[in-house]
Length: 240
Length: 240
Image (cartoon, rainbow over all chains, first blue to last red; front, side, top):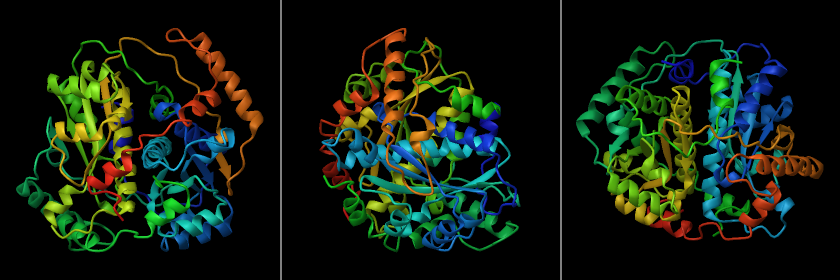
């Protein structure tokens, strides 16, 4: 196992941080790792907002649905798809295509994962905050995001105050398909559900009694941020 | 610099591969690294199609706009957002939300980046293939993708036959914003354009004379896969 694979396989989302700051040199390495990611057709359509203002951090923690670590982490970065940069260079740029939303989301996530892994390799921990999409309009106003900039997710990073357990993922047999898409093997799902039930029961904090199937059934019985389509279009994305 | 950061910073897209196969053990490590990525609210909405059939690989190379390395790479993986798994478990799942397209694209890209970095750390090289979105309907039919499965990108991996130069990225000053979104510094862009002009002129293969601003101006003067909105909706994504 290479050190990089060890870093990747050791991932767990960290939500409790010590007060130790991240040095400027380490932060710069993390950010440069973000930049090193692949970019579709060299379009480079991502921006990162580093939020240091404690007032803004408190507001973002609330906008994200009450996630206090957004305020308390040493660093909080907001990753955005950004075609406004291109519009400034080329005012007649053809924007608003659904495809550009996909490019923006994929490329920006590649950057985010590089940043998180770089941080983890430095002994830091972190967690992605999709919760900023609970209130994308308020987040955009707070960060002065213009049209054609889409806040996708935040990333908290800092020194871990606790080492959480690793949450077991769906087994490879379920996620991987050979040549053609294969129907779900319900026996595999049942075995995984049992595994998750045992994981939650044994977990050192926030133990509960639920399977993965029950969790996703509850999640998908509700609407999923139904305002997002309108927000995207208002922001100049996925209009066509 | 940690070994993980060294791997990340050493990235270059590799499109020429030797005929050496990837061992089953290495491939399994790469795929397990993909699984280890973060997942929004534990939704786990990604599938990976490993395409080994040489007939399918040839077709995918054509669907991707004529990219021969899709056929010649040791491995080709198609990364998909997948809510069909959830629908099989929970037939009444509320699907088709634009937000779910974002979750799918972000989470699947996190997995893809883990897979690429794991491969790179093993001495392999790779390149993401957004070009499969040139013909998403044909790709979906070839791979038997049902509704609620969205092919996002491919990943070629194999042993590099050449070591391409690294393509310089936009400088951190342009991509990073402090607390609020900042307007573009056109002097920084001009300096970067000059840097890219020199990079392309000096490049050992496929040298050309173009700046980044000229490239993105040409790209964004055209429509960007204008069929994507309709395809997504047909596939059960971003309907609402």
